[in-house]
Image (cartoon, rainbow, N blue to C red; front, side, top):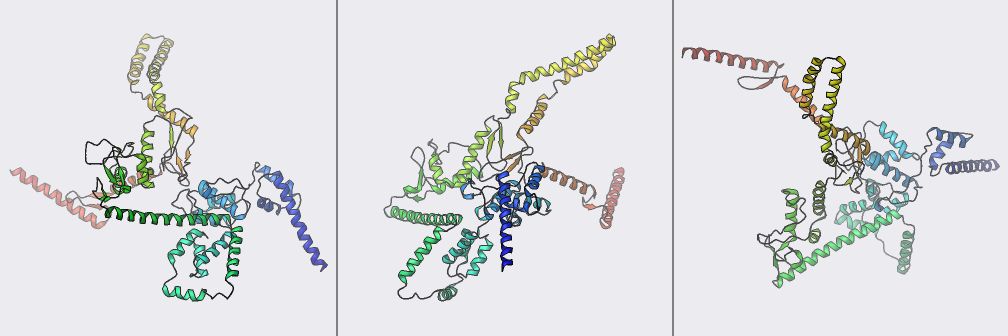
Length: 559
């Protein structure tokens, strides 16, 4: 008994000493990862602080630090440190999935991250770069709420809530659905609602299996117990799970509101039809209530929402006549109407996708009319004003006179060099020969010297030095990297003009394949030269063609 007590005391003492060492290292290196320091302490037996400090200084003062918590729903504006394991995994997942490896599969990243407890970003990056077959994904640089790691309390609460939401489904099936959806409550809720209970007889069986008669006099006690348990659950509920419950309730309220709006519109239409007060649309000539119509700015021509939507979609995605048009004209068949469709009304009638497309077209047209130096994303309309250098057109406008003068200055300098060479030789004849052989061609060729192209090349070099070679889009729904040399999206290890080189390679390979084919003169049949059967066919056709030409010449000679 005393020996066992001595052993436990020794273990606790070693843990206390380890904790004190980690606290000293955290004091020396602020925001350092305690798990990383614990891993370093386990390597040494003595002089832990000195050896670890020496190693950190040998690496240039770099050491893994604690990251901040990541909240997708709060636009990542969280200043609290990630201390728990799932929070640190989420911070590493956000860094890897959105910045370092934006084209790598999320499940693959989660599987690698879950293998490490410290230096997660560094170790995961090393492991990914060493893997020759890294799976890719389509959603470049996107990270959703359901992709994040979940805490153990979240998993337990999600399972408990789904059991309450779907009492007719077995708990094992709910666990399987949760595991399939990365323990996300909302996605599992939607999938279970699509699955249903399995039919009428399955519902009857589950009702008798799960339902039990309440005991007499236990209604008040059960209600009080339920209310107290709900209050206790809300008190200890995970913050992420609470947010998802609020999102689910808001979505259900929005769906109910949309259904109520449809019913109200139907009742309104019936009332208009009953009293014969419907108004005719000026485009499709259908009868609609006043609330379902849009009037032009003149107030004379009404149009239904469907006609306005089809008109805008055809003008934006079809013929394209409305792209960049800031004043949408009235679509009435009367040519005397000079009104337009109000912008505020269009924003209310059109869907979000169509309205965003219209706004993007206006933005692109207005930007193209300006002479600003802009850097634009290759995947969306996001752009930034480049103030590091003036636009090329402004430079050319201000230096047009200097360019013409520079050409003649270069010619005069070369002529002076020729004259100086002639004086050094002391021969007038040689000087005249040099003037005629070099000076006159220089005067003629100065008009052919494309100085503007040379300035453009120098301008591009300066731009690349100041801007860099990649542009990070800061749009919340995009976030892609654009190569500023080829203006293509950067996916993984980027190579400029890769598609163009592939097209050139395919063109050359096709030309080489066509070069080894021999076309028959008479039947124009393309066959491979080294195939014996086709060679015989080409040879026979060639002989027949020559014999026909021979007999034709003989016949024409007698005519």
